[in-house]
Length: 236
Ligand code: UDP
View 1 (cartoon, protein in one colour):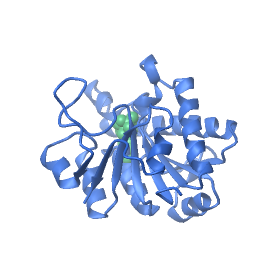
View 2: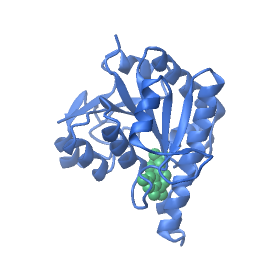
View 3: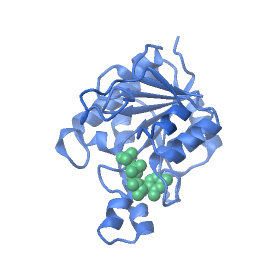
């Protein structure tokens, strides 16, 4: 029995780039699609939010002189590109998937609405919700908190390149240790940069737990679904 009935899976854009440093790595994309298929076949309802950092981030645009709002709109479009790529990879292996957009752009994607998303997930379709929140000055982490709460997900699963939340950045500090579990308040108090403050605050206020785990380890998504202690659990 799967531990969760409905999940919101957050994937960062950066992890889609694999080792190539930019854009979409085909092998990584296919591997993610396989992991998602495995979980879908276990009967779990799946909503997905993908970032766009492998293509464009509004903040870096602003740093190089671009208008921030236009830069953020470019970032949101980057999430659409990633979402289309993932839906295509899922369809290619026989998983029904649809892309919704928080900004109107039919026929590229259907304009997001909560009830249509839940209905599709209930029918076994994977729903990829793109454009984050649809508003500038937000991130896709906040987009996934928002969507996770809206679709009444049991948990937000944040798939990253590290295997959980550490006391410090494990890539920079060899003495960093990993939490098996931690509260939202502790994450905020320690200033741990697992997600932005807005995203954490939304999850806290609406009681959406978060599991942070390494999605680049094949089979890990299924392990989380099966209730294995993989990564770090963030709770009230
Ligand atoms: N973005 C935005 N509003 C949102 C979500 C995303 O403006 O609700 C823009 C923002 O510029 C952000 C970019 O889209 O930098 C890509 O998203 P994010 O940085 O969250 O991607 P990730 O780091 O997960 O790859």
